[in-house]
Amino acid sequence: MYENYNNYDNLFFNVIPNAVGNIKIFGKEDEFIIKQDYNSIPEEEHEIWGRLHHKLISPVDQYASGEYLQGLKALELDQNAMPNFKIISDRLGKISGWVAVPVSGFLDENVFFTLTAQREFPVTDIIRNSKRFDEKYVGVSIQNEDAYTPEPDIFHDIFGHLPFLTDDAYGNFVGKMAQHGLELIKDERGLGPQLIAHNLKRLQNLAWWTYEFGVMKKQSNTDALRKEPNDMDYEIYGAGIISSYSEVMNVVSCAKRILNGSEFLNFDIEEASLTRFDYSDIQDRYYVIESMESLYSSFYDNRDLFLFEGQ
Image 1 (cartoon, helix red, strand yellow):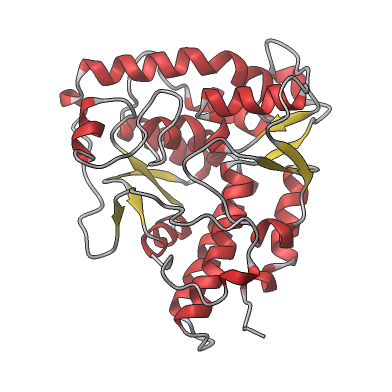
Image 2 (tube, helix red, strand yellow):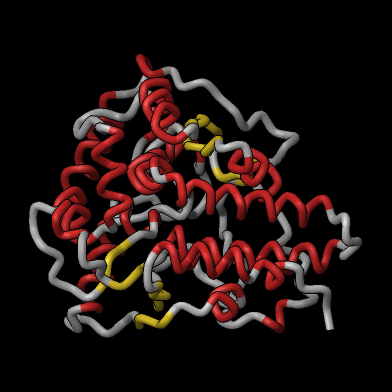
């Protein structure tokens, strides 16, 4: 992790001290790839999956983006049981060439980019609010509730992210971001650790405000995919929102002006890349893109923003 390199943090807005909090992070020296022992999953975890799925499926159907809804249908996730990695990974691979890789938890930049550049998406094998999750963080203060946990769990990774990876354009976008991150880490330009860290943080910011907590303008053709029409001006495409009932309801309530705790800002890639974030709370802002295609082109046309060489 590059959090401790901060010579250029003065260029960021909304700097949050210790943004990663108490999350356990796995690097390339750790045994981060594991095997899922599906038959040994406690019934409690299947019940948690079912509870989360049943609570979110209706608002997600009404407010998520078309790319997500089509992907969710294609993956055919079980509503009442934890996913079997092999079945889901085989299904995803046949659709888009991506595979799901079971991992020990939150990965550092090097490992995450290495996997996703190869179209391998890391998925944590435990679920929030479970005994196994509590055991992993025994003695550590970390939020662990149905509504949210700062460490990505299997529900966030599979229910939130994997449906999008059935879409080729989206998968290419994630892969290109990873390739850029690996190029930074290799440092063939000789930037040095402080500038590498700064540029990686820019890339991390962009990922956070887009494929984790992104919102876009309501698209004209998406309601045909829904059971209930979307009655707000936006669609959700951020996996961090989609996998959190509290975050979905915050977006909906703020969009309908029932609440005013979070603002909707027009997406500007430079502003988003320079704006830090908080793992531990509901987001105070959402950057609104015109469409998924506009997001992709914005990144492809402005990759120099992530090659900052200092002043």
